[in-house]
Image (cartoon, rainbow, N blue to C red; front, side, top):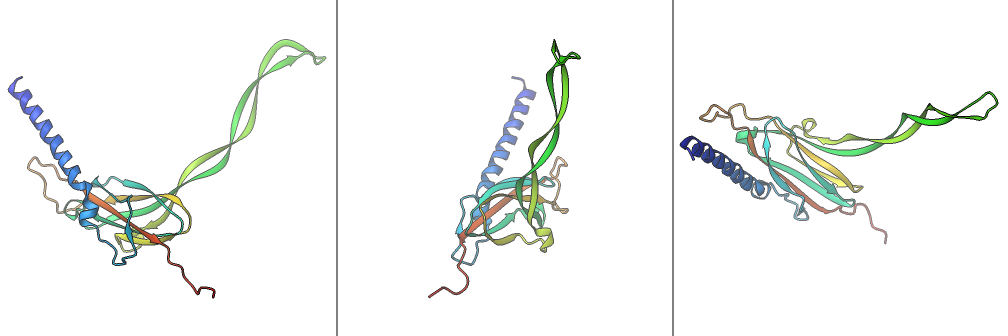
Length: 205
């Protein structure tokens, strides 16, 4: 193995090791840096997760929220790399049905003047309605409309799948690396907490 090849292999291994090490450090980011609720009724939800995020690229965590539960979702991140604020949305992806006109081609017998089959067929095109489904996004909450806060609490009245979408804008003051590249990948932790929705109102005696 030549020296140049050995150097390339060493650099590749070093890069792979650096990425693996960064992923390892990010794995528990929500546990190490998450801001737990002061309300002791909340418990940490097992769907909480951390990941490496690149500036400018949307990252989403798909979770299930259950009816009759209150949820608190808070996001922590590496401000030195990803910037002071993150754009965060809670989005429900719903399948919306609609009817679509489709063309159907069938082979039908050709009849003579007396209505008898001639032994040949012809293509006949007709239009039919077909029920199809299209996935649409329903934005449930957007922190750009709430002073860029990094946490939200809500009560869930129906079990549903939602996505926590995160976009990092980056730190304009981030210093470039020695090779001239800018470090644009940092850790984001999404901490999810839950508790049974408290009963409100007067109880019947």
